[in-house]
Image (cartoon, rainbow, N blue to C red; front, side):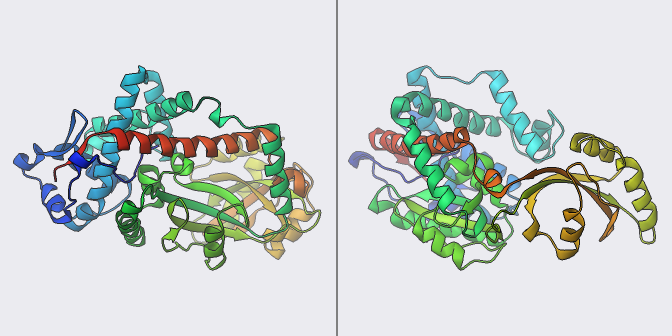
Length: 421
């Protein structure tokens, strides 16, 4: 994951952070681009490196390129680049590297997540004035750091059967509480001297988000939680699963709302409440539904309905249902889990009568028509509680995340870091 943390400098290397000087350093003149932005042990980060990363982030987060945007994002980028140099220096010491196939797989995942044709991301970056090597340097640092943390953590990240059982018990106790679909950005405060700068950075990030920046790319670039790899997505969270400060903030929020910066014992959070659902009714099943939506021009709804009925009739499975629908131009096919209580009364009345494998008649929707197939039906507890293997993985991820922050903090404390802009 991309790191974004405070700097710990040895006494001989303490520098004064000048925001005005930093803003000036982000000019476009070639002479400025050759300047040194920072020295990390015996390696240099140039202003050119900073400018290239700034352009990448502005593009990926959909932030308009302006002097003010560069001034706001500049400190975050410099600190990220410093952390990446420390990570790659540690990789060199441990003789850890990422092969080309692993790197290309990571690029492919980014392309898939952003609906970019396979192999076209470098061309897209070049067309927007961004060197593909900028993304490559960032991805290689992320992949390498994951490998370093796993090697250095050793038995620290082991999870006992008792820990898994305790976690499942907590989840079961919270099943009767409301749950929230949450995304997060987390910036740690590793020392009291970092409080002011981290607070300023999280406030700047919130300003960028309220101005239209994308939450997912900013989380991927700067968040220091394990969820950064998935754009900050935490999934459905029960009350009581998060820190009390975060739970209290979520209680006051409405779906679609972005929180103010929230201070916890470890640092600052921004939370995005994507959705909220009421507790499941006792014994209420959860359904896996496949939905196929077909567009229709004004007056063409009947024809679209006939098409929907024809292409999906008799589908023996949800996979066959999806494959048949996807052959139609403009069709939108998706799957989702839902409880009856989450559906509209009209839809609930229709779905209740359908067996597993049943398909609705065409249903009107804005701009077209849709049909829905019932793929699975599960009892409430079986649907809500994850398997032990998944809980073990989640607990291990939490331990690795905590170890990662401590390891990077130790690398900073022992490094010579000289910020020159």
